[in-house]
Image (tube, rainbow, N blue to C red; front, side, top):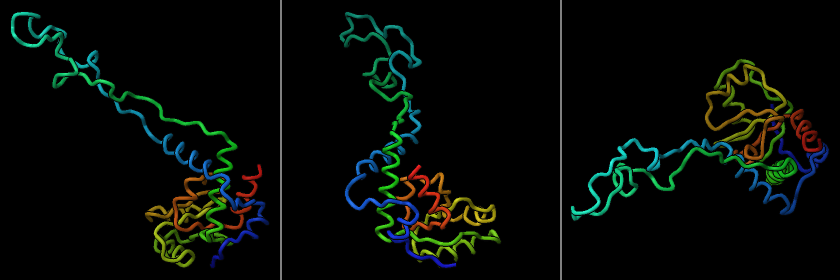
Length: 204
C-alpha cells in the first residue's frame, strides 16, 4: 500500500473546490471556538451568602461591643462565608450556522491540501488487528510524524482494534470528520472513496 500527495487537480476532480485566498479564515476561527465551547461542562458552582450552610443568627449585638457591625456568619467578608459573583451551572454552547460550518470545513481542507499535508490511498485496512501492523502502516504512508488522521468511508473492526491503543493517531469516517480534526494532525490520510464522499458532503 502506498500513498501520494493529494493535489489540487485531484481534489477538483472529486468536486472539492479549494479556497486559495483568505476567505473562510474567520469562519474557521468561529467554528473551532464554538466546538471547544460546546465541550465545556459548565458545572462549576459556588454557594452564595443565601445558600451557604451557616446560622442566620446575628453573631453579636449591634452596639456596645466595640466591634464592627455584623449581621450574619455567612457574610462574604468572613472566612467560610458565601462567595460573591462566583460561577454557577451554565451552558457555554454557541450556535454556528450550517453555511459557516461548511465554509470553515472547506477552508481547513483547502489549507491542508495546498500545504501538501493530505495523502491519498486506495484503501486502509489492518486485517490482523495488530497495533504493530497499524503503526508500521502509518509510518510507511505518512512518515515519522507525531499525529496522523485517517479518513475513510468506513473501517473494519480489526482496523479499529489495531488503532485503539495508538496515542496521537485517529480514525474518522468521512461523514463525521470536522474542521477541528483537519487542523489538529500533522498528516491526513484519505482513502479514494472518502475523498469522493467529502466532495459530495461539501456540495450537498
